[in-house]
Image (cartoon, rainbow, N blue to C red):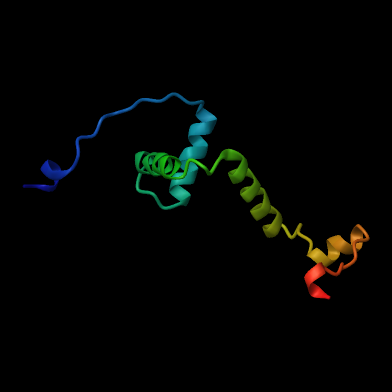
Length: 95
């Protein structure tokens, strides 16, 4: 049996998207080292099915945080406490 005979049958699926979005998709799959647009889209869909609890809001928050870290726009917890006048408080179990 050859590899072609043992692999599952594939079906072509057509989708429509605006050209600018397609350009983003193409840039992304190339940057991430996928061999083709189709391979990238299959991987994205597979991830969406395996991890349905991971939503767009989570992704946006994660990407925003990553951008802030790269741009040096983060603050330590001590900086935030000082800015908002928060003191270290003693917790019940720490006394």
